[in-house]
Image (tube, rainbow, N blue to C red; front, side, top):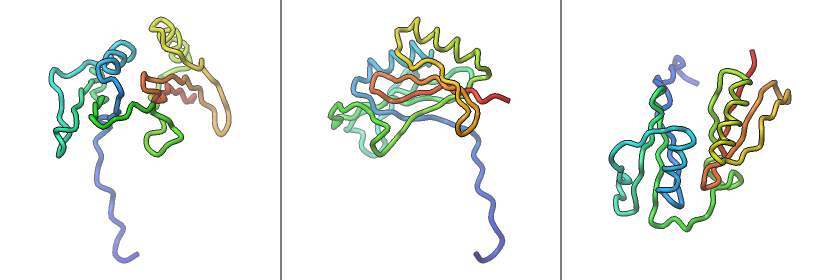
Length: 146
């Protein structure tokens, strides 16, 4: 390495995640109902290939991050799979183990299947609640004690 090490440019925070859906309207409705995300009142064309579809951006109002739900004309309707190249899963942190229990109850009320809360110590202590969106994208809520 030559010269002084340079600092990485700054990142201000997480902005959005984009997911391709087989049924845009159903996925938007699911994310609104289950995560209480709020859609912006317009759709977004795919930059550089506007004819291929569009996206709806759903905001998390308290924290400011978003999930973009995309419709692509060429989408063959294959469900998402963490075993294929691309997104494996998305995880959000919660403040306490009790919050995971509350989320499990909320998901039950919403009719969303989940794996129940799992507590583990391997490879480190954590608790997780795993569920999936309508296109089989794995979503997780995680609590790290301490």
